[in-house]
Length: 198
Ligand SMILES: [Zn+2]
Image (cartoon, rainbow, N blue to C red):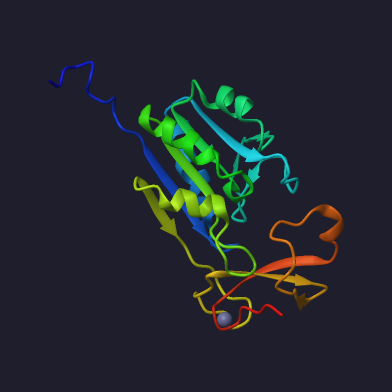
């Protein structure tokens, strides 16, 4: 028999803004967080502490949102950080381990609004495991965007090209680069036709 106690609480929502680099996914994350921030809804935005490019989540569109850099493997810190918040933002989610998805599913059951931004695929065009796991959750609303291809300048870029000293990198390059291997490495958005791996 269904009673008030057995009824599930209000179900939350999980939206994943994804695509290649420079597709506006962080812009979308920031824009949605701003909607809740204006209404003083308790929220938090996390970003991986290994991503040292900027002290705050920064989209290429220039909008800023305060974000807390967190150790991607410190789940007790992540749980503590998000526990009392109604809206949870995560930027660069592809750097977090896949275990974060079950944590997010728990928060979804608790009625949270979860807004995530991250790359879908690596430089080889293969899915990052965590992005794949998020997209596999039946409740995930996937907002996949495209970028402008750096070669043909068409709005059809679905891939992130990795270059080292301007040349496409080989397929055996690591999926995530550590600093001493990242020397001379740049990224650009490219379409399927112009995406190159050697
Ligand atoms: Zn192209």
